[in-house]
Length: 375
Image (cartoon, rainbow, N blue to C red; front, side, top):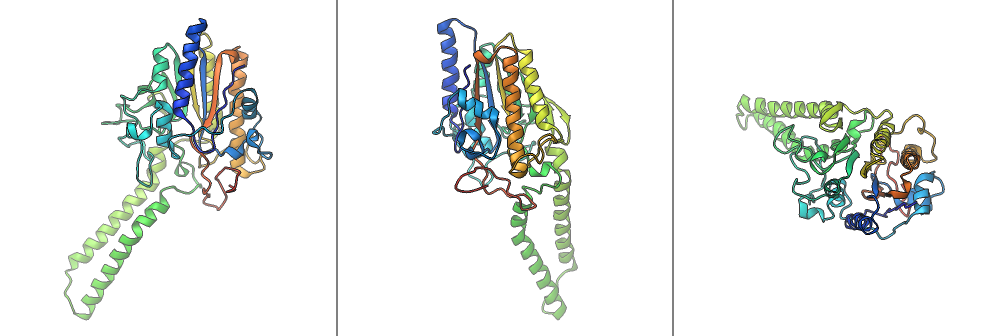
């Protein structure tokens, strides 16, 4: 059985993956056997110290550990960025994200809205497109986070189906705290910081105008007070609209080009993603395939199904790690069921390292990486 297990302290090496895929195809031609299947399993923000194969003794990850035992582990396998969007762009293309316009120097550095016009350029060559040209069936299941549309809401120029994938089931953006009620907001703190100074200036100005008007130093037109109140009211209405409608507008599940759930429900979500992956493999047992199963675990908002909730020794974070390991096991089992293990390359990694400083709205540590900086 050929299992290739690649996991990194921080990130991964997309160029190495492209070389491996090309070598596999070249080897196929040399030995005149059928093209190997390729299964890429990508966690989100997983810490290297959260896996048994890297020394963790309190989280149960037997299926991922099995990949490490039967395959290869890499400890110097570095990616192009510590952020989702640029890291995933590099993963798909084998190029530094700045070369495809997917690197940013701003504080955010990732796509935050499904309506964003940016995304992975259509002229970029992805390994999914190369494999599709070789006759592979290709699917991406789970998180995309590389854009969706360009000029209109239905041109899908940055959609996975425009980058070499035949089938897509998942999220075009990412897993936000704002998508799961009760998990806080990734925007609130930033908006609060951005509004502190403008609100202070507006408040001081309004009070000052009222004082000078009252003591008779200056006659202030009544329209000035009206304009200030109007601006403040409009700003509050916009903010309320944004937070009230964000989940419905930005958190949805798609199958190909169709929205099938809006807003997104986290109930049994990992099971649904896993079921889609298993079914895709089952549909393509007689032809070579590429499956990219891009987990939402262990990015916040954290969630786990009833079968895993409260079962680990590390709270909800541990539950998500163990549920993801279960999913990896389901994929390996279906490969064995269809006698595909001996001709399938299986690769497991994280898009980048753990978000060690992540804290929930209730104060619970939600970041991983069981190393010097505990989380």
